[in-house]
Length: 97
Image (cartoon, rainbow, N blue to C red):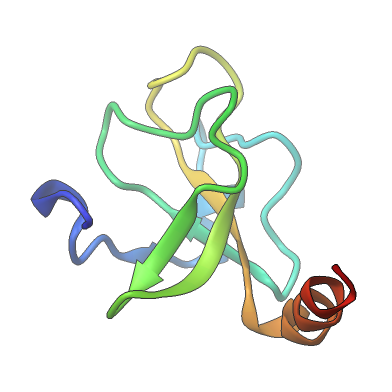
């Protein structure tokens, strides 16, 4: 279950994630399959969070890719990779195992 404070977290425009001062992430958010999310002013992705799911109505729609440059929990954005563009590969990989 998604904690109440994260329910309804907005996905940001790529501009917010890459062009505004003080919002650098590890690598630029710009690929078509990336989502830029800011859950709160002090909570972002940290080491070991990669692969953590983002869900909508119980379905995984994206997984954590990377967070802001600097300390864990620093103000900034978390970049997620959307699942849908990679669904064929995911299904083939699961089916092969």
